Amino acid sequence: MSRLFGTDGVRGIANSELTPELAFRLGEAAGMLLHDSDRGRIVVGKDTRISGDMLEAALVAGICSAGSDALLAGIIPTPAVAFLARELGADGGVVISASHNPAEYNGIKFFSRDGFKLPDELESAIEEHVAANARAARPTGSGVGVARTIDDAVERYIGHAIATVPERLDGLKVALDCGHGAASLTSRIAFERLGAVVSSINCDWDGTDINKECGSTNLGPVKGLVREVSADLGIAHDGDADRVLAVDATGAEVDGDHILAVCAAQMKRESRLPYDTVVGTVMTNLGFEVAMRGLGVRVVKTRVGDRYVLDQMRAMGAVLGGEQSGHVIFLEHTTTGDGLVTALQLARVMHVTGKPLSELAAVMTSYPQVLVNVPVIDKGRVATSVALAAAIAAEEEGLGLSGRVLVRPSGTEPLVRVMVEAADPVTAHAVVDRLVAVVERELG
Image 1 (spheres, one colour):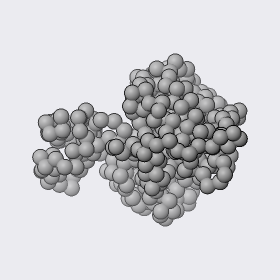
Image 2: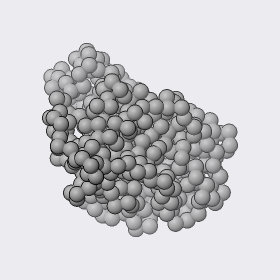
Image 3: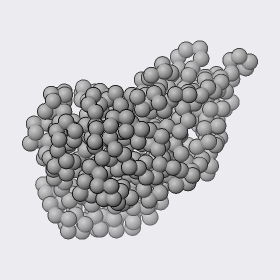
Image 4: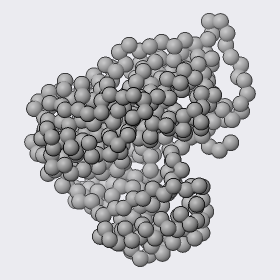
C-alpha cells in the first residue's frame, strides 16, 4: 500500500480515490488512536464540497464504531476545528476538505487534542490500521459512540478570531471573496464586528463551485470588487479558509511572503518577535530574505508545508511563520494556518500604522519568480531521474548567486512544481521552460 498521507492529510477524488470505505477506516482509526481515555471525543468539520456529507457520514460511523463520540461542527474553516479541539477539551479533530483543490477532490485532515497536526508516527499508526484491513474489535451496547452537534461552533471560532485583534477596525473598507467555501460563514461577520465596512462576493455555494475561478486561486474577482467599491483591502480565501491572499487599494496582489513581511516588520517594531526570527519555506522569495536582513530579522527555511513550518517554529520558539501560498501561522493565537486570523492581523497593521497596504507591502521587493505546475505520471521519479538532476545542476551553475532553482513533487496532486528565481524575468522564464521540457520528457 502506498503512503496515504501527503503534506496535508489524505486526499483524492471523492468517491473514487477517497471512498466512503476509506473514510470509515480513517474514522475508526481516529476513534481508536487519538485518545487515551475510556471514551474519546473527536471534533469533525467540513467545507462546502458536495462530497462532504457522504464522507462525513462514513467518517463519523467509523469514529462511533470505535467507541468514540463525534462532535459535529458542520461547515466551518479548518483552523476552527483545531481551535475547537482545544477549546472543548476534545481528544482531536478531523476536517473533511481538500483546501484549494477543485470541487471533485476532497481530503481528510487530522489534528491532535492540542490543535496541532499529527506527528509522523501517529499518521503511520493510522495508515497501518487502514492497511491491515482487518475488522477491529468493536464495542457494543453503551460502548458505541454517538454523534452530537456543536450548536455554537461557528460563533465560538468567530469570537476567538476577533479576540486576536485588540483594536477596532472602524471605517476600514474591505472587499472579501470567500471562494464559495467555509469562510462564507465567518469572515464577513468577524470584520464587521470589528467595525470594518465589508463588501463580499462568492459567499454562497452549491457544493460544486468551491474555489472555481474565485478566492485565493483566482484573484480576478476580488480585484474587481476592490475597484468597484474603492476598498482599502481585498481578502481572498481558499475553500477551507486556512490560507489567505490580499489585494491592496491599487489592485496589486499581496502574497503570503508580503503578508508575512508586513506582519514581521510590525511585530519587530512592537518587540513581539522572539529571537528576531521568522520561519519560511524553500519557496519563500529571495526578496523576503533581503528585506528581513535589513530589519535585523533572521529567516529560517523548511520544506514546503505549513506543518513543517510549524514544527520548526515550535522547536526554536518562533511565533511567526508561513508560506508564499498564504498559509501564515501566528503561534500566539493559532496552532495552524488560519486565513481569517491572518487577514485580521494584516488589517490591524494597516490600522495601527495608518498606512495603506501598498506602502506597507513595499517593505520587500520580490525577485522575479516563475512557477510552473507540470502534470506527470510518476511524480516520485523527481528524486531518481539522473537526467533531471543533471539539468537542474546545469541551470543552477548558470544562475550562480543571482538566482535559484527548486523542482519538487506536489504533496497533494499528480504534479511536479518547477520554480525558478532570477535577477530578471526573461532569464527565469527561459530556465523554467528548459526544465519543464526535461520533466515532461523524463516523467511522462
